[in-house]
Image (cartoon, rainbow, N blue to C red; front, side):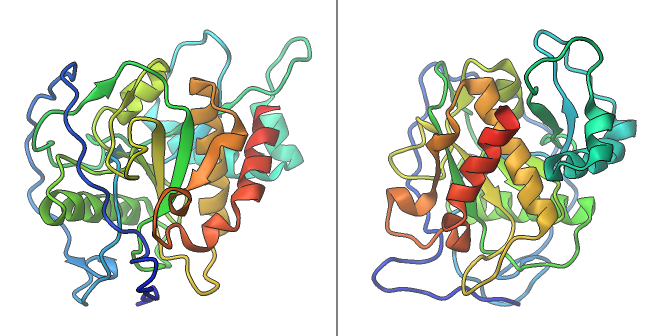
Length: 297
């Protein structure tokens, strides 16, 4: 298991942000049946029994991801049977292959590139626990994206099942250890390139494009930013797998398109506090901004 280095001057890799107060305008979420069992919560993430560094996991329900082209005004269609195909198309499209371009081409006159909507596994799909209280929905758009890492194992299991187990691990940590109402992050991106919804209602509000859920991921910025967490611990030269990076780009591009966020407004957790989070991903932010801008061009 990979263990993140600590720093007495800057704190742990991703230290917990204080719980934010519920918004009085919040809409309560109806209780759901808890899953029959949840994976272990050791240092290395799902199933691990070793001691763990305490990461800052703040956001809420997440979903596993695949993408498809989106036309302005087109209805949202969710056909789970073709998600694996969409995912392969997305991964190819982000790298700019000719085959991918043909797969997502839109017939008709030439037009600017459309953002690609990732398929996200919602909280119901990964069988999340119900929130332990009210989920607050803010009636304004976020102005930025804040990237995190979860300080879990840099697992080589890139499956959808692993992504769901990781989402459970994060939710358990945030609810049971941090005492939060739900997952702190809005969305999680697995090392295999699957997106899961974190805090409940994050996906619903993203698709609506006019408001967002109040998360718990970055102290002082939770009412302004969408928190996206990457599975893994990215210190000491560790880098994200290609699939994870490509889907992170696609998700950020879609969030930017939905909320009108400029690609320049993508930050790392450490930009707002004493933390090492998101590790080497912070050094990769200029590249992330450039690639998101390209996806929106």
